[in-house]
Image (spheres, rainbow, N blue to C red):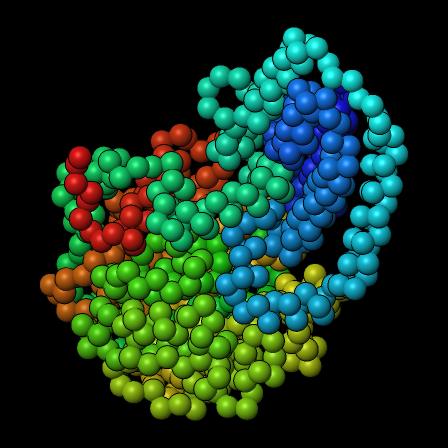
Length: 614
């Protein structure tokens, strides 16, 4: 009986630790100032806390059940495991809170940046921004304190434990196993176990995202990463191969024999005079919120805002993914992000590749990146996808390596300005400066804002990129007046002023702006768009009539869409941007997104042919 009580105490402690971790995020971070706690939210949080705690005590429970039949107490192993479980649970809760500070999210796919990103740059950033030594010392002292606490809590070892009668042991163990079974399923006896999709209990996506415990979030991301990496990724979409024909026909509303069939397009003819040079500029963390009407005007990206005049643009466009590699690899390859790109280079198909089709239109291509081209194999990936040349920061002279991620945006743009850009060329540019460790001296650069702290410094790094973006476009138009530019962000910034943090849609949108010679004659604003719309929109602008191509996007000139704009976190439903984890989202729209991304995953891995019926 003593062991059962010890497990109950450990279980309660673990549940309280994860509950405290969640509450610390809720009360500390201003993202939740306008969020209301509901009974449904509390209930679902409690279910996740209890389920996670149940998984944590499983080893101790196994020893308890084994001891009930063997007459052994397993005092030492249980005590050691209790210390381990409490320390690990606490670390997960604390690190998750620190992670939230940086990423405005509980553990998500960015956690794998430690393993697949530029590890040196990441660890240097951590070392510079956090007191690593004191944190490690605190962790060691905490572990010692937990050891003494558990030693006190567990009491003394019973030197002569009596073996309980078999019937009594069976009764206790059966009851214990039944309780554990229900807890491990999320306090559910029948039906399916508690899952991530069950978090949509409120209309507030931030509150919903806070429901799972940090341990559960980490487990989910590890599962997604491994299943995607080892070809089991359809499980991430709760799908099987036999479902795909139905998915294809329901998503694209027709009867199709291959995945590519509904994605084929034929150009209607050029809308502007053929530009000699095309630049697609993907700015790190370039958000749309400074451009959106009815919000406080901080004038953070004035040059980008000025470009809206006489342009084809959308201020509410979805990025292709959550992070830089997910988004950029999707734009380059033309296939929606479905979790694969986190691995880095995947040479599965170039059937939708941006540069490949631009080559068919007569454009050579160069990919410029302010960081090192070997980052996640990005340069190799771009080459495979049809770029004739890749120029990483390491090829930009002595300025490379003077900052954490490669070269500053100023140096990147100046390098391209001084280069001879050939006629009939397509140039994609990826910037890096609006990123940790946010070490640009903004005051020295002439930033007009009064920066009151580190948060302001992070927010206003977008101004730095915008400054040199504006200078670059102005100079290039003087040098090559018949150029066309496309400006977007790889993903929204995680940092926003306090006054606008409550606007959920701002967490999902980036701008897409087409500007240059002739575009003023066809200028208009599109309500909603997504990154993969850039390619077909550009093709419809500049290609000859009858040009055949394939795309997962849709031209911004089209009045209606096959599929509403969507990405891995949100979808446009009834004229509004709604998070996929929001209770307000109709079930059929959530199902549409699931099927769409399952098709994208399968297409990335297996080609256009649908699986044969067995």
